[in-house]
Image (cartoon, rainbow, N blue to C red; front, side, top):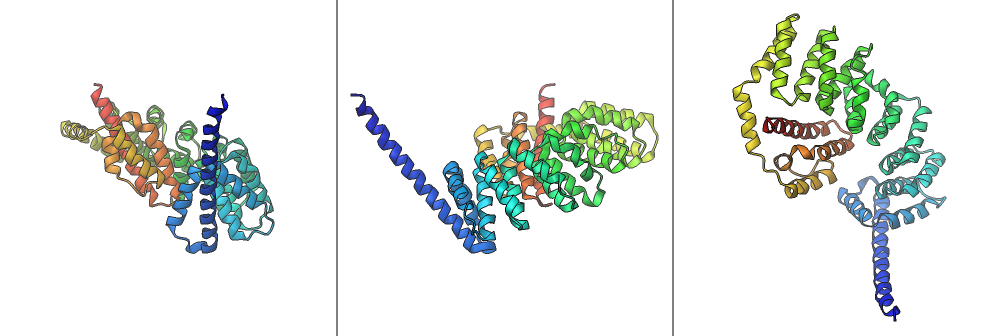
Length: 371
């Protein structure tokens, strides 16, 4: 009589399958609407497609791959289909996307293929992007690919990023985009560059470590480099970086007092003395008061985090996120700031720094709590 239990299961399976089919059909209809609308497609349509794909990734991916097999697709169809395939994050779509890239002569189609591969990720996609980078000569085109490899957090791409670290101050935003997305994976590499013979490489590495990635493990190497560095402006940059990566006010004060006591360049001693003066009872009291305003709440944190992550930092309350967070949330906050940079715009830098302020405050509060 076991079949009595099988029938309800089969009925449920049929309903579920039918439901997925209906969802897939609805998403594909919306995708065709986007194709027809072209550049005038509303943002809400893209968001709806994204939500629909998230609910039924594999089936939508299969449907899109089938359509890509059509040899008579328009350029706009290829652009939209490949974009949607990236959202589906299906590793099985890597091969078809590579095929479209190889056959297309459209810059837009090729660009979307590379972006989709970066979103899908995995060894095959990473290898393809690295190979494409090696065969690309234009500086702008190479930056675009390095940007995607940074998004993939490809450690194999790090040696190739030296060409960006060599850029001058006017193009420092390129370093922020690439290494900001690379996140902690780039930290050992950048620490190894703070003593490079090329001044731009040193300057950019110091800036990235001290003002963007803010890894605590960089504190000791940055201190050691300070005593070795001859360039006054870079010595000042090193002090500014140390203010961000040293969460213990007492340790920071001790180091900066040492800088003052050794004397030397007036700019250096003045900067260091101002930092020492700022670390007083009043500042510590202010930090203590800020700590009291914290209301750690996993539920509240998750609510704000979900909105911010899904919108790449455009929707959600940063202040509420910070109030609800603790030092244990740092790994997720780092993921959020990396997602914010996927907006690929300088205005995203301000939101990125909002996350850094939360991280720094959480670290300081944690140090003070444990003393």
